[in-house]
Figure (cartoon, rainbow, N blue to C red):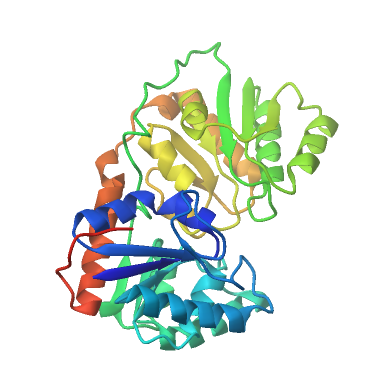
Length: 354
């Protein structure tokens, strides 16, 4: 089977798919990667007119996608990210297109803007051979509108290389210890970093000696740092930019996550892999993470209460009751490969090359 993997930008492939690609090629299939920008290794096809957001280059992108499929003699195209998935499903390709959905762009689906997204996705499903969903809400939405036999649910998302995310011993905890929390993500409106500061204020009001380390970058990082200063939290909260995720998680007692919705938040799965609980709001995608402790959406006070309760009881540093082996990327790669083989009826191939 000759698999085409398409993303809006090469960074999406670099972030989520290298290990999965290895499982496909190890099984004897070949993989061709395409995106609007190059992948880190440069071994990809760049589709002109394709980017993160829809633009005037759609006609150019359609032509480029058709050339890519023909020149690579692809049997199936797997697409992820909203712009790429929309363009490739409207390009009138002669091969099946499978949508690897990292998250439908709404939480409850009841807002006016949500309905626009839903109408677009419902129309695109008519040109979709298969769907891969990674959270229960998206899976249910697709299941009501799409053939269940052509729908796959991945409960661990793209999976993890567990050698990179080794389980670590919990930090010590005693009555005099400072609570070390970490927030990891993009400083953006959807990730809501301001709510993390509200949680810290709630913990302070309960007499908890807490430190929050915020890791990441984005348009709201400067505003967040300014709010930290205005709230008098400079000694409690740092937001110094990107850093190593594994190191940050290992040197924390728990992960704080404040997103408005997710596909299936990788950083929360990474926390589980290294043995740290996550504390978050009960929103789409987040509620599917094993052992996550959730509060009502947007209620920072309630989330602070939940964090405090686990810290005071010692539960925060107790071992997780979850088999981390279920997060192995090889399980994901094999599941997707079998799914594609079933859709294309191609179970044998020659030597795989990227």
